[in-house]
Amino acid sequence: MKKIIVSLCVATLLVSCKSGAPVATHQPDQVAVTIDLNHVVDDKVQVHITPPTLNTNEVVFHFPKIIPGTYSEDDYGKFIDDFKALDAHGKALAITKLDTNSWLIKNATHLNQVTYWVNDTYDIESGGGFGSGVFSPAGTNINDGKNFMINNHGFVGYFDSKKDVPYSVTVTHPATLFGATSLVDTDSSTTSDVFSVARYNELVDNPIMYSAPDNVTFTIDGMDVLFSVYSPSGKHSAKLLAPDLEKCMRAQKKFLGPINSNKRYTVLLYLADMKGKDARGFGALEHNSSTSVVFPEMMPSSALGKEIIDVVSHEFFHIVTPLGVHSNEIHYFDFNNPKMSKHLWMYEGVTEYFANLFQVNQGLIDENAFYKRMVGKINNAKRLDDTLPFTKMSANVLVSPCKEQYLNVYEKGALIGMCLDIIIREKSNGTLGILDLMQKLTDEYGPKKPFEDSVLFDKITALTYPEVGDFLKTYVDGSTPIPYDVYFAKMGVNNSTMKKSVNPFIFNKVSCITANATKEIVVKNTTLSSFMTGIGLLADDKIIALNDTNYTLDNISDMMTAAQNWKDGDAVRIKIIRNDKEQILTGKVALTFEESKGYLFSDASKEALKNAWLKG
Image 1 (cartoon, rainbow, N blue to C red):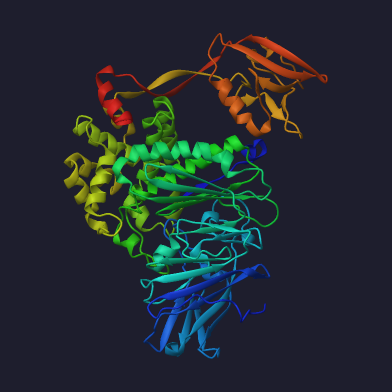
Image 2: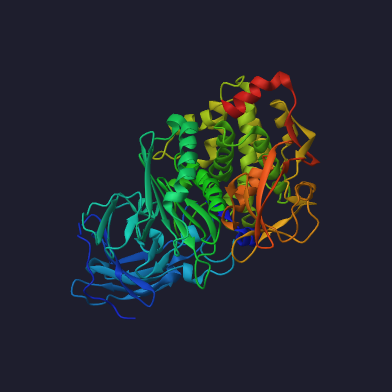
């Protein structure tokens, strides 16, 4: 999972029961589910569940309190109304609600069907970011005839002791809507889809988004990728956003090599219109063969494309861990009384490290940008509790004070992954790294063979070096802060003073441009940068193009990136409108610089080792 808070500055730049509802074909050894999207009543959808054969007089039906990857208690049972248990003659059986998520059904041997109505979570979200209800990529949406975000844990529950029987799910829907998912539809009808899974956990692992078709498909080294977009106003499309996503995923597949064997992957992008009741928790949630992503529709296409790459790259690497390598706590996940694993440093931290390392490895960013990202994580980690053992935080992440430290999985967790990578590179003279370790763990365990939480450190030490085990005991299981300078120095990288060019459209750390109501880029009435005054820009000038490339608010971030990449002496041609007349301003770039502290490669004797680390 990756949660994103979209700041204001980025954004600105930027009932009755239908007794005749269809019921899925039932086999005695499976749970048959029907979700009816054709008849939405009071913004609710009805679900019918036919149980497998039950041999006990009582059975409990649950909705999850928590799902894998979210690390928060969301109580999906609170979105369920009018829960009923019926026998073969439609007569109601006695039920008792045990808690928010659980119903006790009596005379269970006579149970023929469970029915209930589902409310969606997007309608109750308020505020942005964390603590605002269910995290949107793990939530549900019911927008009659337009969009249904079906995270199955919000629509379908499970019978006690029956999570591991097969599920057959039939979804009836308008012909105008397409269900994007990595599940295989075995029904050729345009108004009905049938999906089969081996157990409840697999159903939860496969979200489905129904909306008017806006999809792009591409194939990467034998893996078919489906990218589906819901943009309520049509501002964004899969076709326009797909090129950056495809470039990113191709680089990830190349980076992973044989460690990934997925044949099918789906990226679901839901864009919130930010008007009234809608999704507010922005980011993404991983699954074995898909990622669900939620962002605000108002974002400019260029900014949205960059955010998608950032979150999808993180979520896709979850196929390595915990989806590929995980403990018993993950494999046999208890949706209502979960026991958390000690190893979030690996599940989230190593995943986040890979999401940054692959970019420098595949040439998407340079090594200085990579160092800067890691330094940013060091600074962020220092704002959290740097002495709380990571294993303790992980095992207790659902309760205070550990849950307030959860964000450190993306900061210190990634840095733990980096330090382990450095140790392995150093001890192997550059021939091995943490990706090799994860491949060995995948060979040893894999998706269907979980490990014991308590043995992982010993197993990793046996597969690598004693120094790796010492690091894990001291800095991950222990309370000692990590001396990052020591580990950077092993790769010839040291803390230095560096000069960095200032963006030509920024003065004194403040942007000298803004945008008006018609999305035109306008020069502010303020002190301008020396470049802007030198080329002749004035307050209220409207910038139409730079070097014959047109720019508006929709691609202003591209303009700022282009300017940041200028070199001293580069020729510049700026098309403007001044006093309603079009003009061309020409000149040459004269950059200004600022000094800052940062990490740079400075030890030539370590160059081969550093290159193996970042490029190996």
